[in-house]
Structures are given as C-alpha cells and as structure tokens.
Length: 23
Image (tube, rainbow, N blue to C red; front, side, top):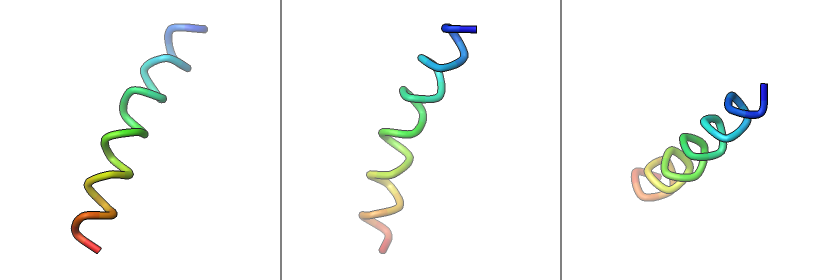
C-alpha cells in the first residue's frame, strides 16, 4: 500500500542519518 511506502521513507531518512553519525 502507499502507506507502507511512506512509513519506509520516514524511517529510512532518520535511520541513515544515525548510521552516518555513528560511522
């Protein structure tokens, strides 16, 4: 569903930032 895609994007963005900071 479209809702799933939206949730994935909202989680992917902050998650990538956290990974970059820890790196």
